[in-house]
Length: 469
Image 1 (cartoon, rainbow, N blue to C red):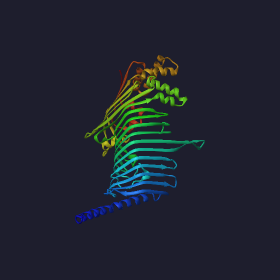
Image 2: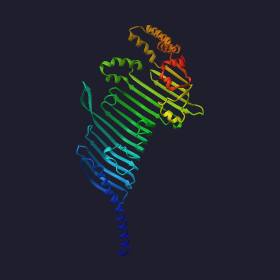
Image 3: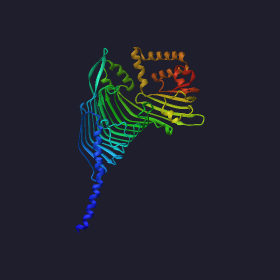
Image 4: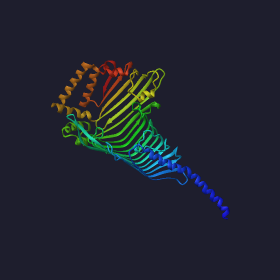
């Protein structure tokens, strides 16, 4: 019986040892590559253990610690290469903590990071969570937290004065991205975003949260002047800072013009003007409170909803650019715009490229067209006349009479269309009208840049009709 079993046992042992040879080599390669990664950086690297899976297909380095001579510290509980070492199925990192001690000290921690089908097995650990040279099919990050300290200075009498240290923090619960390269991101989904900091852009000290962010088709990462984005969506944004207190239910942006249309939608942007005024410098509060009262009727809460869309209809001799925009400031005003513009593009210019970059209008020729604008009063104009009259120390009736005289003066300078426009605005403040409609007919064979360059000549070149209701 033993003589029969011995060949089978020897065969199994031989196969096991043979399969272990390449995996042992992978473990040695991973350790060598990790040490080479830090070879040009002054400091000390220690690796607790490097091993392979029992049947291969997985190579793991555990308890990696690097301490730089400058005080930088990197700790990584586990670094795993899954699949073929040279063409990995995935690279997985767990328990990452990077402490930087440069001019702007900071800390980055990640619970788990998975890179699917990376272009190489070794990632630039010190540049995580973003490695600009990495290409990968997928990226998943769970439990990302970043903090950074930045010196705050101000120039006084030609000298830079140190004001202290500003600390910024950002946390992300989950991030998933696809088709990553140095030039583009195919898609990105991020949930559970929150942050805080001092001197955030132009809004001062504060904090924010965002339930979800998603984008599709971000290209031109390596060229800022040619960056494009197909789609973007923000959900449940909240900001509370010194100069901005706001919430936003949803923002959707469609910038992919290859299908001939695009646009954006803004849902329930709420500005807490009362809180913002309370945080403003004392000397500015009276002026800001007056503006808030006009916009909100004294509530201090302003809500905005907006939707804009544009589409392109190509033709043989000319094409049409159709656009709509609707903006509503609740308890204040409504603004609606519709445009139907036949245009001729320069030879060789694709409509999608034109719509994606509306700043390039030099060679666009308008072939006539129309623009209709409707201004609706939801309470704003009722509040304007009393406030402006009080500011001038006159009665409301005197203010309105003065405004009508000024409207006639504008008409003498710029034409009867302008007089009709300003008279309509006075009628809305007087309560004699609730809507002001402006109908513009554009001149044929005119350049867009030329019209924009001489706005004072527009009344003579446009056909304008103004109506009040």
